[in-house]
Length: 271
Image 1 (spheres, one colour):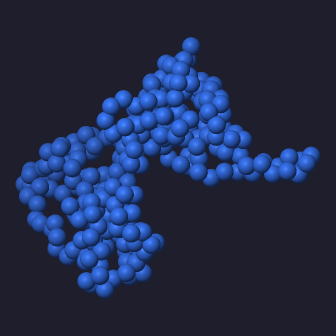
Image 2 (cartoon, helix red, strand yellow):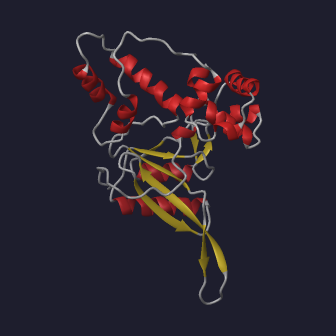
Image 3 (cartoon, one colour):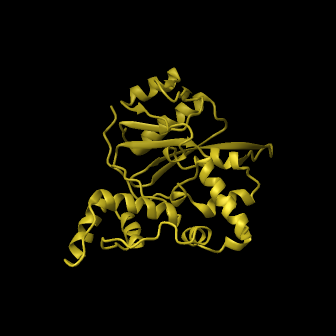
C-alpha cells in the first residue's frame, strides 16, 4: 500500500544505486509499492535532485496527487504536536487522545482511541517521522558492538591497535554505557556485560542484543532461539532473559551509536 511507503526514501536509495530488490530486502517494503513509486517518478520525469529538498509528505503528494485525500467527519488533531509531545517523559497516546477529545468542540465528532493511534502511525510513516516507541523503565537493556571503532596508541612502541566499542543503552532514559575492548570475541563480550551490570548497579529482566554469534547461535523465523551457552549462563546469573531482535526487523535492534547520558532507569539490585 503506497500510502504508507516513504516515497522519498525509496528515491534516495535508488539514487544511491540500490536495485528494487535490494530496497525491498533492506527496508522491508513490498515490491509493488517500490515499483509504483519509481514508475510514478519516471512518468513525471523526477529524479532525486528534484525532490531532495522536499519533505516526505510533499514527495508523496507530488508522485500521487489526490491519493488518500478525503474530508473526514472527525475533528483532526495537530499530528506534528502529537509527535512532539510523545517525546516528553510520561506522555502517552492515551493521554494525548484524551486531551484531543477534551479540546474538540461538540459540533464535530471525535475519533476513537484506536483510530487515533492508527492515524498517528500513518502520519509518522508519510511525514518521515520515526514513530515513538514506548518503553518501561528498568525493563530491558539493548546491547551491541558499535559500528565505528577507535585506535589505541602504545606510547612505548608507537604501535596502533584497533579498539572495538561495546555499547549498552537503557531505552527508556537513553542512559548509555560504553566499554572498549581489543577484540569482539566471546570472552570480551561477556566481560563487557559484567562491567555494564556493575556500572548500572543492577540487572533487568531482558537483554536485547543483535543476532551476533557471540550471543545467538540461531534465530529461526519459527521455533526457539538458540543461544550461546556461555551467554545464556551469564544472563541467567544476572536473572535476565536474552531476547534478540527479530531478523530483518531493524527497529527491534539496538541503535548502532553512543547515546548521550540524560537519565537513569530504575533497577532491580543484582545479587
